[in-house]
Length: 458
Image 1: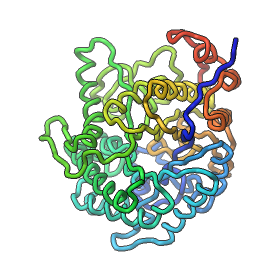
Image 2: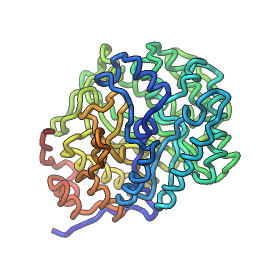
Image 3: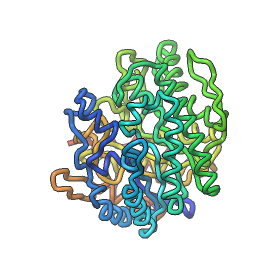
Image 4: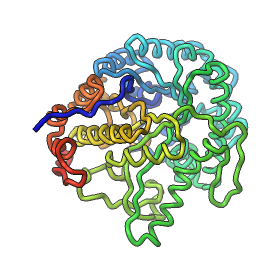
């Protein structure tokens, strides 16, 4: 049978994404405070600690690893608590270190994407009320000014907020992030203030660098109700409306519509995005579970072809990427970047399969004339994973990390993603080498063809 390749457009971006709290180490922010409180939200009460030691300089060797992977971009975040450790203090040395990182990426031929807020806040901001206080909007806009004035000449690609609704839900509805509240109206308030802050940050960036690209990384779940839909369908539509649609529609129209609340008009918000950032990981197939807040009140009934997944994670479902791309495209009508996607897999038996199915789904979307411009795989190397901490079941890295020695070891999935990046495409030779069970389905089979079941994790 003839070999084939799914080629991507020239200039397509291949890279990984990281978060400062996950990789830098030795933090002093809202998340390190949450870890110290030992609420039980974090796996085995673990603490971030050394993480991957980027702040101590290991970013240099890890940027070399990105270069080896053939990447032409990387998405990283800056840590607000380092840059502004006190309300009236700017740490110029922290800004200088971030300059060195951005320069390091550019020297290796990689375009940075900088995220301004990735789930963490300075504790002084939390003590002022955090994302329930009006003052936080102005605080964030001024923080954006600091960062853009210091780094804007090195970066033209900005993400104001990572997964804002995940943050709002986890911090103010299900109590898994600091400050650990359980109030839907506080969740709504948080979402509103983040939208106001985004609108202000967008104006700041564009006033200084009109050609810069600015957007948000929005997490979307794939949610498919099982019968009876009269029971499962309506509650899932509510989750879809609050968690997915409300924030995106507000960015398009300037109006935030949420259940049991009057429509809020946010000045200067409509159209404040130059791209649509999509974070996609999993599917929930099932129905409403009112006693399960950790799964966003959704119960899970995985498809029998799906690989095993850690508890509370949902169904590993890369083939849903195509549908979610179309969802966000139909709403926002701007170029799309897959700002995060990946799978937890300590044994690396599922990740190559995930990568192949995900990349093929993105290629399909492009060939339906949807302007997907890049993929940021989560993540470069195993790290601290929020509430999962250092749980071995939540290893996402293309490189394995030994957290005692800080040694990194490339996985087969890393070599696979490297070959895809260097070729700017997915070939049958690659699939035959790394995921042979998918060759027939992706290159010679029919869309409905069953694929060989993946082995269980060791």
